[in-house]
Amino acid sequence: MLQDILPNVYIIEEICKIPKTSYNKARAQYLSPLFMLDIRNYAEKKDFDLILGITAVDLFVPELNFVFGQAEFGSKARTAIISTYRLYPEFYRQPKSEPLFFKRVLKEALHEIGHTLGLDHCTPDCIMFFSNSIMDTDMKPASFCTKCREKISKKT
Image 1: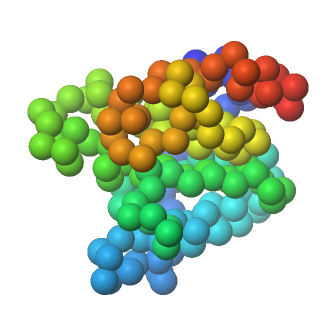
Image 2: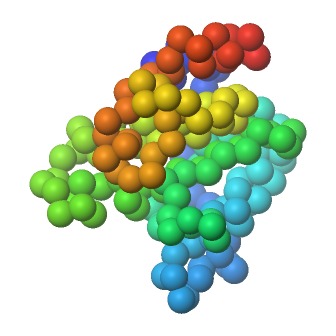
């Protein structure tokens, strides 16, 4: 699926340090924009066009309780991050399920990559639908709608 949209995708398994000042003790969460800054700097040093970071810590932005992910496309390197913290079924007291977990990870990764390609939030029949809860993530498809696919093909 990802290879169909972005044929030159490479997986780089590199462990990066958590940004020192990102932890908010009162919220017991990590500030996502600081991760984005580190990822963007890393991508620009390596001359990557697009990068997706994956973390296991609970991310937030000040205006929301949490985020599954965040993305930007205005800088030299289009940058995104997702957190697996709230994607595990066990987080919601559901039975452990690796297939469900990986499906959620795929959906959030595709969603954030979509943002790096300039896509906005879309309808419930598209991966670009905003997930306000894990139920939204589970209900939306793991693919872009026709309209979003057309936008991507015009940009790539």
